[in-house]
Length: 427
Ligand code: HOZ
Image (cartoon, rainbow, N blue to C red; front, side):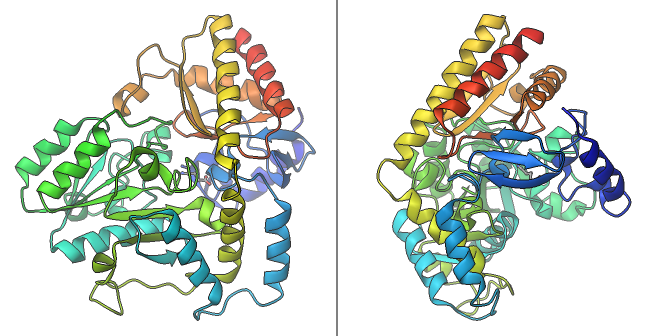
């Protein structure tokens, strides 16, 4: 595969953009090789500037659940763009969006739109602190909630990929307000509540961890979080930026039957345009400005294009049988990949929930940050490079999640399984 044009672009990009990329994992520093620069995407595939086409399982890190350039989304956007791109004023569309979200996610009576997942978690924390009058937040090792100062402590995604889970530039005083517990280990949370009984404003968690690879919650873990936060009058914040509308219409909270106090959304609700949202019960959201003292605002919040793409996406997702299809495709791919690794004699921990998946190159059961880190990242790098060369595009880091979309056909999945089979034999 030739990447000449991409390589030339990277050389040019490095002169004006740090590492040539606008988000660290895209630089391929942990897997080696050269990132293809993408020219266009359609359905389940993306095509780079050298003309190579790949079956895409990154899906823009989650949003493209319908596949790329879905005809309904494209049509809706074409119509919307002619009506202007931003007004900085209320629109009928954002009311529809709020109605769609709150009817799908029962724990959310009210929702505020923002422009990214990072803004959603940042605002959710401020809300938790403003509502409770407390300052400490509990997060989990390896969970990533965007690049919010207080949450870049033991962070997943690029943090774990590049060995910088605790970012520089976060004042010590702020980092001290973040307490870190172990994912899937309720006792580590109880210990923190015992240590700081009246100081914890909230516990923020990705109910299905998706930024240290994909790790499902253990049975009872989320229920336990719900209980312990209620006992201590702290708020439970679900970061469903990845899982919202991905594992079902009501997200991971619907799947596991837990009502958090605050939910953060992003990715899918923007249909591929920049978006985020946070919300909860009305008595809680009532403290948000201008009704209450917790300030939060944004020029592009509820942007008409982003909301149009998101609304159109949500309406397709509400059609009958959509999540069943995603489940079938996810199952088919994951079983095929597991067989391929088994036949090649490679020990892999294969995780999947619906259309989210991840393979860890380790023989140890992966349940948290420490066990995720037992994965052989050098072997992952070889696997990644092999797949890219075969025309299969997965995230360039062991510590991310793969996504199947509605656009993946049986043929795409079979081609992928065959590619994995060939690559696995070379590892
Ligand atoms: N940290 C993001 C995924 N978890 C990557 C975002 C990007 O590079 O676009």
